[in-house]
Length: 183
Image: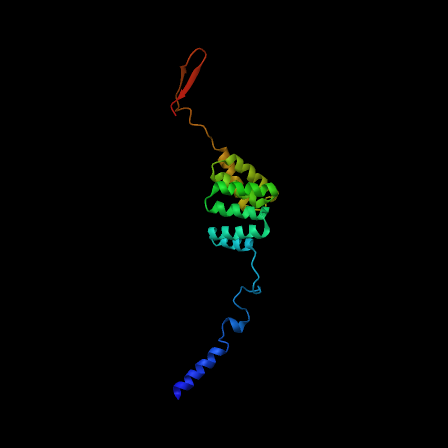
């Protein structure tokens, strides 16, 4: 008899609300979202980038491209994710395409500058950072620091110390000479 009463109590308990999500009225979805409503792929991608999940962010940005088309914001985001994944060639192509659509898009200009610095092209990076800095009206500390770094890299001397370098002139025929150095 006791066992039957216990089984009946457990059976009735399973039919009622058990607390948790059902009593709060939130449901299994994120707050503020109705069932079947999706979060924008760009928003998800930005959150994943901030969390350091670059592969997942790239997938979210690709989803956004499918939903919104390849606009400047989506292409810039795709370029940023590829930059973080070390895919510099892909990142550069995507960022340049974003800038073809919107030449004033500051995040794309800044990230293109970062790609160019990483590729060892500081003069091009400097131009991209200068444009981003001007468009941003100098309000971003990150862009200002990137520009400062690019300026420093372009001002570095690229010539060897000529005091330690010896040169030789070798005749290679009538009127033709070859300059050799000990570099």
